[in-house]
Amino acid sequence: MKAIAIAVLWGLTFAVAHAAEPGRAPLPAIEIAKPGQCVEPKDVIRRDHMKFLRHQRDLTMHEGIRTKKHSLNECISCHASPKTGSVIGEGGFCQSCHDYAAVKPDCWDCHQPKPGQKSVAGARP
Amino acid sequence: MSERNDDRRKFLAAAAAGAGFVALAPGIRLVEIAAAKPDNEAVTARVRWGMLIDTTRCQTGCTECVSACNKENHLGEVKKPRTDAQWIRKIDLKELKTGRALSLPMMCQHCANPPCVDVCPTGASFKRADGIVLVDRHICIGCRYCMMACPYKARSFVHEPHTDQNPEVPRGQGCVEGCTLCVHRVDRGGTPACVEACAAAGHNAMLFGDLNDPESAIAKRVREVKTTQVRADLKLDLGVRYEGI
Image (cartoon, each protein chain N blue to C red):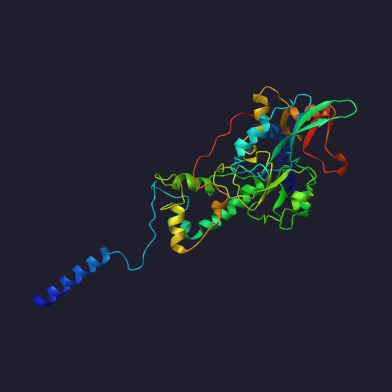
């Protein structure tokens, strides 16, 4: 009986220690500078952010719809690293995951990876 | 039967009231459009953005509009004047017989029938419902057919990689681009940077507004004075008009 108890205890200890250990597969280092609620649930935005962005980009480009919810500039202003001020580069929010997944998005060929949206001054005559 | 007639009367009355509202609506709409479009609304063909350039006020040697454009859209990051993108440029004209000289800014004329859109093989070059002609860089393959088709030499090809973009004006290597009429400002109720700079310099040679709104300053002006479309013979129905040429 005593032996069984010791064995169970040993097993539990091992299980707890094992859970605390980092997994065997490496994970991307995602730094969330401003913790809070994303515009979509976490699992949805992780899987489908590119679809949201693609949809929004066509609406903005062709129909002039500039809602903030799925706007790339809004992603950037929330997720830019406080250190570099950017979502790309070493440890950048976008790049750390894309490097991990070996995905090379070409957003940054044209888009500015640092926030800084300007407000419009002056009214129309 | 009489009950049904009552229903019918009520329905007709409601319909008439609705019609009255619709008749009122255009007047209200115009005010709304002049203020600003809500972010979640698509642009419509009820608006036709246009610009009127008064060449009698445009000063020879002044390049305020060009520098304002470069600053707003972060052009000229790469210091290679021969290939740098140019969305607006100043042109000096002189009539040789009389010696009459004038200066004017030339940029995308935002045609209603744009040749750049006709020739684009991918559909990247397009005209928005409100008359602004743009390049969708997500679709542009950089073939430069539109540059050849444009009678106004209004488009440029981006030869170099860029990193210093304005967050609201994405631009990069390998695409064709041109004046966007500062669409990011216009959608928020502003005016193009060149127009603002021209007014700030005290010249007031550029007037921006909705050509479809009879109450707008630009519509009133084009109704009153003779304005010219450059190469009107091409019948492109330009959004940019010139006065005094």
